Image 1 (cartoon, rainbow over the protein chains, first blue to last red):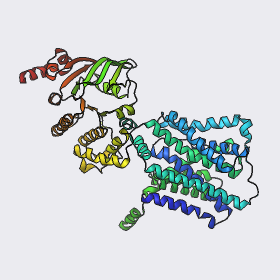
Image 2: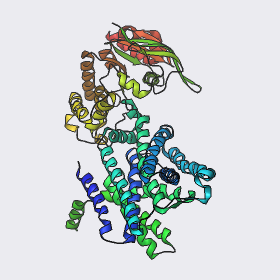
Image 3: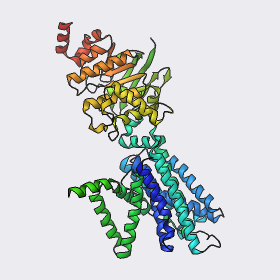
Image 4: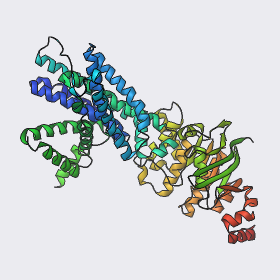
Length: 311
Length: 249
């Protein structure tokens, strides 16, 4: 295992220690941090490794939230509802990917963007099943206190993050990761050397959906109420891309750091500039990308040290 | 010798442009076939059609006793059809070694990444690039990238190898080196179809020549015979070349 992969696992383990240090706010922030890292690491499989600019994250997230939410309403246990959301997202996305990933570049971006809109309209219209625009109430788990529940959902989301990080590490060192790197660099040449590009791209799309679906399911159970404009929000598609760009495309450690950095910025800016927070956040992101175009992962301790010595 | 590749009345058009017209052609195993013709004659299209990049609109392509007319590119590659590109197509961020490893990995069913890298090392050594193994492909010179293409094609353990202008853009020392490599490959029993503009190389290496002009085959035969064929002289070689080679011959 490479150093950066070990660092990623250490980082994920460090996040698990968060409940030791704080109350409900730290848990809430920690849960969102895990959620963001899951989204960004998942996006990285198709966006960073295969080089396909996917805007489908919101679709997977909303799908997972609604699939798990509806099943929870029918009395399924949480783990089963989340597992179903994850597996059906994996299979569904892989099947869709085999079709959608025939498009390249901007065309693929637009097609993936429309996926969330299609699902949103479906949910809006299937009023009997989903409650439509009125949203969906998810039953409270009986008999546990507020803090116990917050801790439980934090660790549930953390578990998904751990699984996603392991997936990212395994994919990075596998034949699949190698194939995706080939596809990103030269898809024509890839198929010329016998690489079944459709198969590998579909697998990547499926993997990028699986854990996002699970995270969506846990999110739904956590907040107890979801509606289409919340879980199919386009920001769920855009944020992971920004995080991955901030962290450094392709590297799982960089992407996870990017997710945490993004959350930190979002939180600090929101607190201090409540009226213009989106504007300030946007400005900060632009500045970061301008001065650190290859993201956080291009910053290395040894390089900083060398630069400091020369100055 | 049995026919490894057989094309029967293969045609391909791109909307209004007829790129290949009723091409009928066989390649026997062990042969080194030269495919020549003026620019735009359809030489590369013919290779693309066989490899499944631009499948034939009509006619059939048989390879090794199997109909591959409608086959996908990656399937053709796994059957043992490999090619080099006229315009080199490396994975530019990868090292030279990983470029070749990719070819070894995905063309052979069940290959592991580690075994593919081992095999890649041997192929790089064969084309004389072992020193550049760790270098990103983007930093190699054109001549080196052409040889990298060749190593990639060989890593696929081809039965039939298409060489699409491997000598274009090389200086005479590099051409000589590439020609030696082609000789070695032919001696090792790989069937080769080469697209080439340098007649010196074609006459030196090929056992048979076919000439394509406006998408149709206009000549097929032994090298000396073909270059004195009036239709070939008219379409491609030109009177001057014919007189010069007649003088030499």
